[in-house]
Amino acid sequence: MKFTSNMVTNVELIDEQHKTLFNHIDLVEAMGKTPLDKEKAMETIGFLGDYIEKHFGDEEELQRNSRYSRYKEHHKLHKWYIGEYRKLRAEYDRNGYSEYFAHILNESIVDWYAKHVLVEDIALGKHLGAEVVT
Image 1 (tube, rainbow, N blue to C red):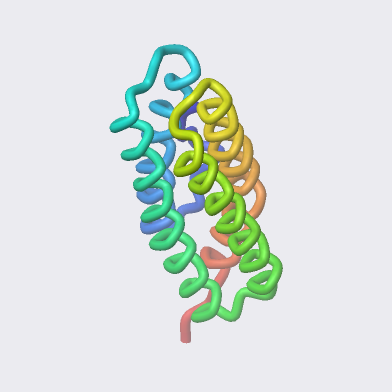
Image 2: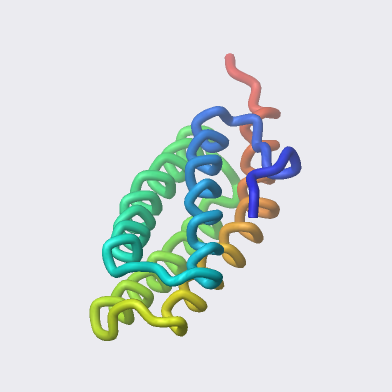
């Protein structure tokens, strides 16, 4: 999966973070096609944990500062995904890398982020672009 023009929010910070994520998604998708060593799997899990903490925090700060009307709903989606990440991390810590792990990691990142970016973050970008600064 690649970062494409239909994913652009026109909020530079968010778009740059999304590009970084989608570069990693390419690596995650490759996991299902070639064997991945434990070190690379651990690096990906670590990246994802750091990414969601920083990215979600940045998005939510923009939402609060701009009085985004969908802040509560967006925040709930972020909290849900953090819970999913914790389950994913626990699965890796418990059982290590496996084809099953590659599958759930791929599904978790690719499916959720594609949907989240295309729906929720595009709406946030429109709100921020429409904001009138006085």
